[in-house]
Image 1 (spheres, helix red, strand yellow):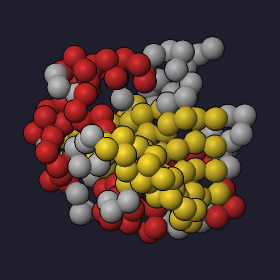
Image 2: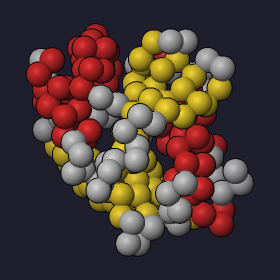
Image 3: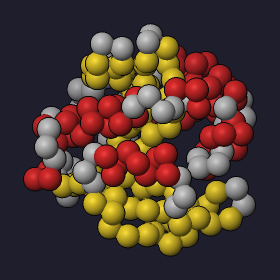
Image 4: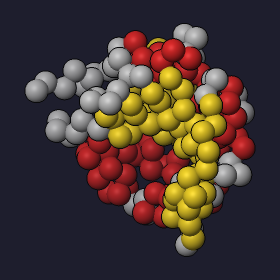
Length: 185
């Protein structure tokens, strides 16, 4: 089966686009992870496992492998600089559902970049992938991240108790969802 997403690029605005992540993005992404490690590790369990460039390369090889049908990940390019990742996780074509995950460099936060990027992915998921349900899971207390699904019209369904192991202990996750019929476009 041919990978129809291989060269995919989604324009978000004149200053912002999403491009399918490749192994060639590893140096830029690892530089952000390494520079913002203290900030990012507050909410992202993978940060402690990204200790060298090879770790980021391994992840990008996995998600961009031809046989991978459960992940579709994009680099976020703002003002011509890679500044984070966003993508679909756990794509379930049978049940027409998926999860959106994301992270952004600390210095690029607070400018609406992630909200705009999420909106573009919602359009793509509902219109091109024909999904019916999209989830976003956010660590309880991560108000910057939870503001994104709230502003995009998601419904807080509840708390996934001890849903993530982070920094040596289990953390609760807020589970947000948006259905196709609820998306305003």
